[in-house]
Length: 186
Image (cartoon, rainbow, N blue to C red; front, side):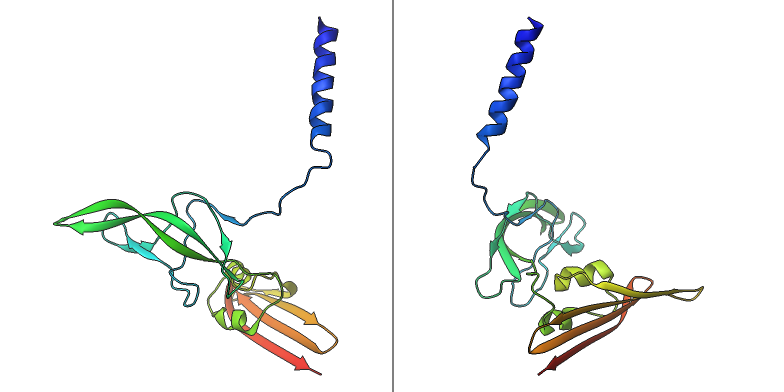
């Protein structure tokens, strides 16, 4: 009986392995998990805001994961129909409502740092926020640390036969303090 069970297990494993052989796979789709914030408009980038149960204004967070579609006129943005929770004042009570709207998400295409992306990088941002804004990780060039500073210098470069583009960014205590964009065309 043990031999029969072992044989069946081996046959089942083999069939499962070969069933996927030669199968076509779909390209990965971009999704946003529950709790992601979203934008009102891809053109302005204002984060969608709602009220919580105390009336405080907060960023709206999606209540279920969504699959994004690429925004046609700007590949760095995607959109989806999203559900979220908002509270509205009814009389003297804050009443909870489930709402639905088209939400836009910043999903940068990793094709380099554009000047537009560079201008959206602001002083005070963290390294992760800069990477989120530009879609590009950067090379750590140097670090300096003492009792007054915890400085890190990063750079990013792109070269082609007709141009060189350099971006330099400095963080102190993980907050952006300096940025530079240099383009040399020839």
